[in-house]
Image (cartoon, rainbow, N blue to C red; front, side, top):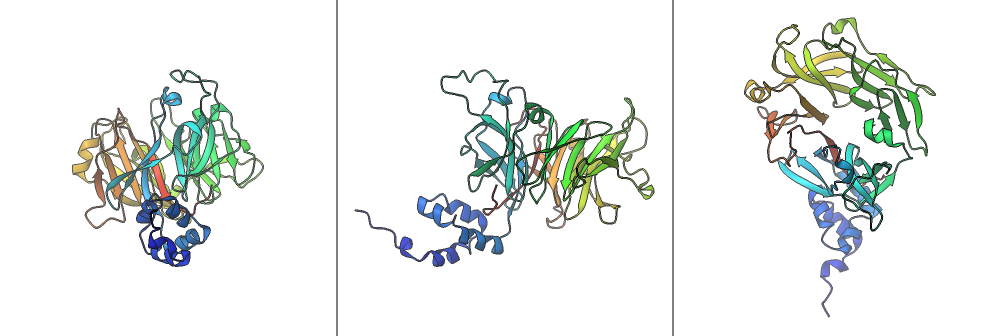
Length: 375
C-alpha cells in the first residue's frame, strides 16, 4: 500500500501559511493537483487569508462572437490574456450544467454569462433550439461555483447589454427599457426613455452611463446620458453636459465609454483632423472624465506608428477597465493595448496570438480573478 505523502500530515493552519506565500497564479494551479489540495485551498479560513494578503488577477477576457449559430455552438472555456506575464490563459466552463455559455460581463471576481439548458437526451443538437430561454448566470470560474439570476424573457438575452458593478448590482439595458436587480429575487423594470440605442453603457455605483446619438441620419452627434438607478420606483435618463465641455464629443469619431479607475469614465475614439463630415482621423485618443469634478482631461493618445494599422479602419471595438484599454479592428489580427501602469515607453503595445475570430473585431471585458468571490 502506497504511503501517504508527509505533507498530508502537516496541520492545515501550517499548510495555509505556506501556500499563502505563493502568488495567486500558483495557488490556482496547486488546487488542481489533487482532491486534498482542492479542499485545503478552498476552505473559508484560507480564502479569508487570501482576501487580506493577495490582490486579484487583472485579466483581459475575450467574448465569444454572438452569431446566429451561437445558440448551438458550445464554448467550453474562457480565453483571457494576462498583461503582466504576457501570456494567454483558458478557464474551463464545463462545470456549468448549461449549453453554449456566452460570457458578457464581469465584476469583482464574478463572471456573468448567458446560457440555456442542455438539450434533452436523443435531441438533435445540429439544429438550434429557438424556443429555449436563456438564463443569466453569475459564476466564479476559479471556484467552479455559480448562481442563476431571476428569470428573464428571451428578448433580453438577444438585445440587452449586461452591466455589473463592484457591489454586484446588475442591469440589462435596451433602447426601450431596462431591468435592474441587486441581491433580490426579482427585477425592477423601467423605461429607458433614451433618444437612440445606448452605446457602451456603464454601471458605476448607483448610476448608469451611456452614449447616445442625437444627430441626424447623415451626421452623428454623440451625447452622454446618465441615470440614477437608486431613484425608485422609476429612474429616468438625463443628458449629462456642461458648458465648459465645449465640443468634447465632436472631436472624436465613434466614441466609446470604458470604466476608468475610481470614479472616472474613459472615452475612446478616433481624433478627427477637422470638423468636416468625413474628416479622417489622426490618431486614437483616450479622454478621462472625473465624475466628482465633472472635468475632462487627456489620458493618452495612440502613437503614430501603431495608429497606421487603424488608419483605414471604419469600425473598431473598445473594451477594458481601470487603466487598461484594448482596441481592435478588422484585418489587423491583434489587439492594441493601452496600459497606464506599464513602464514608461511601454504604455501602448500589441497583444498577439489571439484566438481565431474571423473578422478580427474582438470584444471583451476585464476579469478580476478572486478565489473568495461568491456568486
